[in-house]
Length: 115
Length: 112
Image (cartoon, rainbow over all chains, first blue to last red; front, side, top):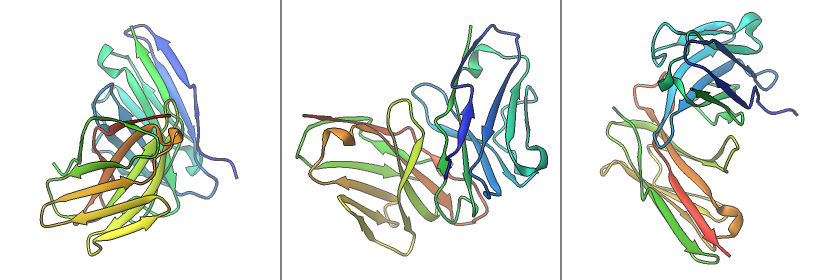
């Protein structure tokens, strides 16, 4: 069974540019999460999808971030325009049940560097 | 914030020794989970302990939970070089229906 896959693994962009990160969850997992880790800091929650609906987007930092999950399958996270403080590793995770009931399965992350 | 805070931030031990990492949190929880992250890889779930449990074992892992002190510990016995990784605790609020909240992690180095 394929795990959670994320693309790209690493992206380097200039401030003001746009980047789109993609996450393919494990097949059959209705719950999809985005987290971000800025170097040396905690892993912070961004948002939670249940199928195609946003269950909780309380962690999204501002309106430069847009997440979608078309058809309840893969998800994209777009940052437009990117700022220096957006640099970090963006993790996607999926699960059959919500995270408060059990484990999450994480992808390897997309490292974003904004110059 | 119910954010977990791991202690120490970094730990270096010899292969064969035991490694203990601690996690403190601030609010009431439903459960607490430990994850491992190898360098450049994703997080891997290790163990979940519920608020009404005090201790759980999984292989060489032993997790304890003290809800009165709002703390948990992860013990890895007979460590191996392959245990070198970052370890994170994550908490779920007792109010439920909330996402996992992670701490900053403990970086464990096991020297062969």
